[in-house]
Image (cartoon, rainbow over all chains, first blue to last red; front, side, top):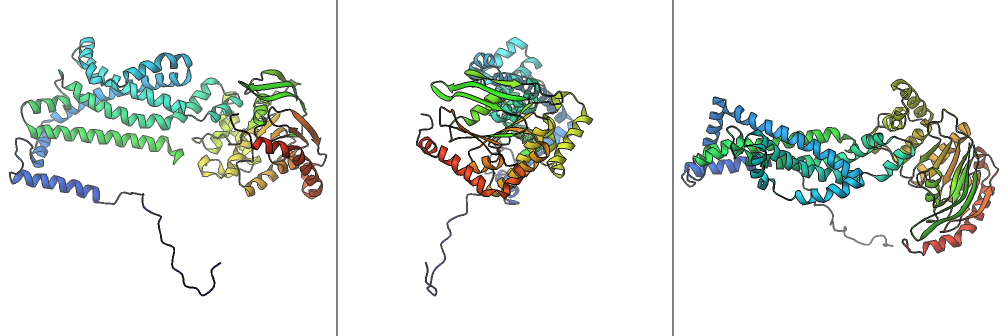
Length: 267
Length: 255
């Protein structure tokens, strides 16, 4: 016990830290600074226009796309492929993932095949898809579908595997039907794993979209970028890349909204 | 409806968990099952409710459950087993939805059990918003909604802090006094056993066998005033279990 009246010193503080949090305007400021430096470099001749166009020129190219209405043609074609390919791939992926998660036979039969095909970069299969499905929309959608399917399968059956078994026992103990247990316990329980899978599959879908559009497409953001590259029109090329970035950000934002809504019970 | 356990044997691989359990479980009373940890109490409860099949012997139901009992053998779990994505109301409704009553009847039953467990004002809360004690009350409401003949309670108060534990125990005593439900109540807490049990079954350590059955004749709602008598029972139970609990404590978990 300390004797009364004896001098002491405060215990030194050693907690705190390890909690990064977003600081207001820093993000936009850094972005503006980089674009500003880039613009200044281009205007002063430090960056050759052949290698990199000034941001203002890329912006002008974007404006031109908007004026001529070509933007909507390219974007429309791309979004349609993305939407069809990703949706069908996701639906099939969830169906197969759930069966692998539920049935021993599906697990033994399909899990190894999925594991074997998942790591193949689907771009490598693109020429094959062109032979199978033709140079038109078929091969493009098939590539995106394939690329979306496998990560979704893996995320889904991982999610089903991780559903709390005690909840399933509870369902059984109340005599719930098999389909009720799947619909009301297993699927919602797997959702926290399936939704982050959407982010991965959407990112893969955009990569494959651009790659697929570089073969025999008239319209589409990928086709636009390829053409710009062939003509050394770097301003158009950067404009195309900006469109892709905005596309990716929008998709991510949509998935984040969906997550916040569907997983609001978890907050 | 009553239950009879007839020569139950169970084990997992080479590990024998239960050996020759014979037990009658009467209606309208609470049968507490106590024993050292790892003696197979929870396994026994899963066998009683048909969540697991015994290696030998059987669980026999004597007499039929009345037709309005939707789920005659109904569990209350230690970890509550509430669906985190459903509200209090949704969790109760979950177990009614398969019975095809229609929306109005379901709502009537849900309203009724929530009122009986004093949860009505929490009906729209998600489980994460509730304390442990409230979660267990939701689980009790859910169990009552299917009009069980037997409640199979697996250490329902063990995950709660000491104060909530006391409150919920009083709730259970109230509930039994009003509804006279039948229950098999697993616990390792002897205090709980002597406060809630009309009959206390003592299991030995693994492989579990019935060591002794004691009857406590005091009515549940009068027990608070008879602490000395309860303490005598508790000490008797503790003497029965003590050495085995110690031995069980020293065993390797997977041994």
